[in-house]
Amino acid sequence: MRLGPHLHRIGNDIVAAYLVVTDDGVTVIDAGLAGHWHDLNAELAGLRRAVGDIRGVVLTHGDTDHLGFAERLRREHGVPVHVHAADAARARGEVKPKISWGRLRLGPTAGFFRYAVSKGGFRTTYLTEVVEVHDGQVLDLPGAPRIIGLPGHSPGSVAIHVPVAEAIFVGDALTTRHVLTGQRGPQPAPFTDDPRQAVASLRQLEDIRATWLLPGHGPPWSGGVAEAVRAIRTTA
Image 1 (cartoon, rainbow, N blue to C red):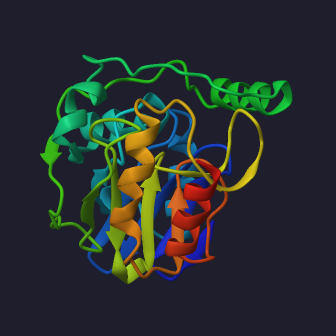
Image 2 (cartoon, rainbow, N blue to C red):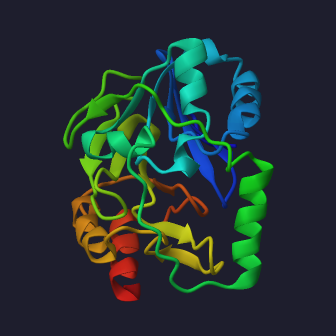
């Protein structure tokens, strides 16, 4: 799905990953679920690109529904996978996330798990090697992604700002469609380790100017980053 000349999405509003496409190659932001491998290749083919054009993967955090095909890219194609140092052990499967369900509705919750099963969400391969990154770092990858620390959903949760794509990728620091309730609009994400810290961390985004605010779950948001943060504070 094309969002802009340098920006594409794979997956859907339930689980999404993103491609930053430049003349220098492709940067993958999050790796969705294992079955998104086929979506990745189809999107690249539509761009007349191939897996060999991918220069790196950058993860917003280390949860399994964002690891997807990352280890396959690393193992089979030598693509480095970047994750914040505080989530490196999580991405390797050495530390398990805290599970807090909160409120839910049967229909949306069942839909989330149906989709996850259909895309191999319960056969995720953890990473065996990662490149650790830190808050404020600008990576030498297509689009020059900048890391912005947003601890709360996980200790190493980050946003990734890519100006050439006019986008800020936020992973599960927030959501625009709650996978357990189906509620739409900017709001706190479920399965968050420290909900209070997660909301407080969003202040790091208030001065970001970007056309697209892109979560791991939910439709792309183009209503302004600061407006999304204000809505979440109200909801929280």
